[in-house]
Amino acid sequence: MQMLEPSEFLAMMQNHWRDELKRLRGKPPLWRCFDCKRWIPREELPMKCSECSGPPLQGKKVGYRYKKILQDAMVCSHCVNKHDHLRKMVLDAMMQAYAHGLEKRATMRAMGKFAGAV
Image (tube, rainbow, N blue to C red):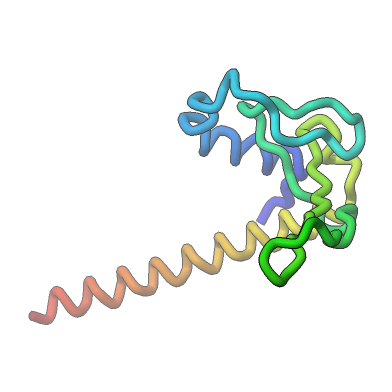
């Protein structure tokens, strides 16, 4: 299996979600890039870096609990290759997709044999 760079993986995901991202074009951005500090447009997918993210902070009190404020480090497609630890996350996602494909093929093979026996 060929090892993908995080930017290549992100480009594949943007291509996959192209239609949904077109509908979000023009809306205000939600995230700022952790590295270059530019606002990430809605038609561009960022990648969440769990190692660079900070711990959840205690926000205002809602009911009897405090609302958690998440400090998510979102990285744009230009800066994603700077984070070497994201390569492991991309590899894990590729392995999960491969395992899911194997399970799906095994299920289809089993259903095909079952349908042919009846």
